Length: 538
Image (spheres, rainbow, N blue to C red):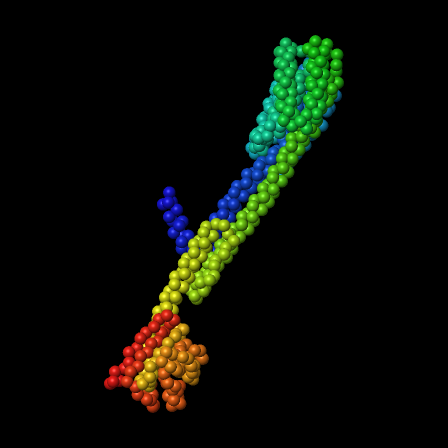
């Protein structure tokens, strides 16, 4: 595992701390930016899909309006082409206006496709098919005319589903909007197409005032399909309402109106067409069923599709809010990360600066300082070890200084001892005739510079009067040693003057001679050195 980190360790060892933190910060910023970009891309893609779904609902509604007008035109053609009876003159008079309504509805879809930058070939074929069919109304046999209209409607319905697929309306990931859009795209148009076909078949039968067994079978089959489509419609709306209770009342109201219209149409077909009474005029049946079908389309255009759009718009607002909250939260986290990162950097640099300053003080000879850090990390352990090293070093230096001072003191003591011995021999020569005793005390000074004035003190001895003299020895204004002399007879004035002028190693100017002398002196209290009298040659 350690081998994995070897390249990074080598790289970090080549960088200073500002460069290390800058590199780590850059990598962290890139990671956060990549995560933010991923979140933004996901939420923005979701918003884009939902916006495209909303645009698809508008285009799909326009296509359904065109489909509604073509279905109306088919019913009018079926009523005006009544076979041997010649059809309904009132319905034939409304064909021209219906054709204009179809043209206007197709033109509206065409404008929307151009505005969206799309004008596919299937749509062009649909327009061409309508232009071919429009002048043939009333000239073709009723069955062929009805079938050609139905094929055109089927093509337009399939194209509407294709539009819904392209605009992701049939791929919605949320349950409530999925079932609403599934109802709007497939279930409701299929149901309305079956009702429109029943309207056309019933209008044609009433106009011809006859009904063949084949037409009876087709009407009964259509009624069965309508019943099945109604059950699917109820299931879809119930599922959507279960996952979104806010739309339950509105959806149930639309479903109730649709069911009421289906029952009215079913009763009218049974009473006037399938029972072959033909009591209702074609115009009345056509208008009545048209109103029922228009109510169904009104439910589609004013309730189902707008409800789906509202759900999609709410999701867009929620997605945008989530996007901005995510970006704001990520930005705050990034700022907090940067703040903590900079704080860690400044804390480490501050601690390192304290170490560097203390190392400089140690290098200059100050060993009494200590490194005090407020951190509780590994640097605190290093600071404790550093302080311990400083204490140990100070103790070692103190012991060394004491040894050096002791050595110097011993050297100075030996030097003073030698000077004292020299002075002792000099005084011994000066006082050879007298009995001499002196004590040489040392306080550790470097050298003996001069002898101060001689002081005399008297005392008694066994053999009579003794004279004691003290010779202070001065160095740098302080008394560093004393010679204490004891003589059986007082010194003469000349001897006193000679002693006052005496320096280590010097010779007296005038002095009385003596045959014997004994003396002793000490460099430190308790240390006594005996000096023998000089030989006759000295």
